[in-house]
Amino acid sequence: MKRRHITGFYIETLVLIVIFVTVVLVLTQIFGVSRNESRSARMLTNAVTLAENAAEAVSASRDPEALAQLLNTDNNAQYDEEEGVLAYYGPDLKPAADGVYLVQAGWEPQQTDAGTLVNSRISVWYGQEKEPLYVLETAVYLPEVIS
Image 1 (cartoon, rainbow, N blue to C red):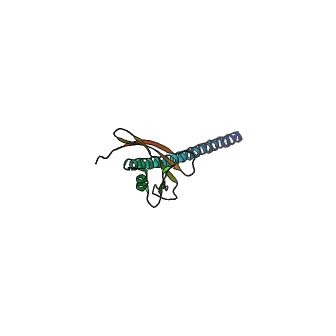
Image 2: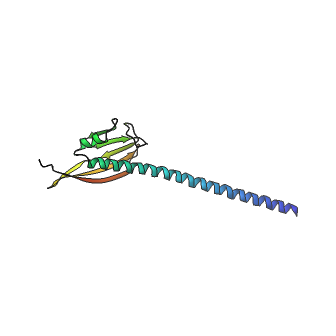
Image 3: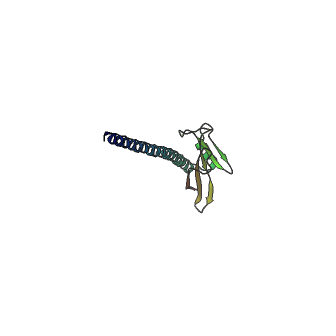
């Protein structure tokens, strides 16, 4: 009779251990997924911040060369006729010529009766990714200067 109670105790203990290990494995998976999501969210937030800063620089510029000068710190930005303005930033969002973030800002002027409308597509890339992390399309109106 005692033998059955001890066997039952061992079986219950093994079942509890299996349940405990299962819960630990599930929680480990959940924390792993949340860590990846947190990393992705941080990268996207950084991309949005860089795109917003580039959009403000576009609105403060009269031409793409001036935009490149505004974004250039420590030789991290240059203007290319085909690519537009390219600026590199490090993971801490500080300008760096060999940075992991690439901000590409286009400059497409369009003449209107009252002045020039500049459409700009700002793309932020991370590392060697094939698709941009974030794309912001903006436009700024540059009125004609009357002397």
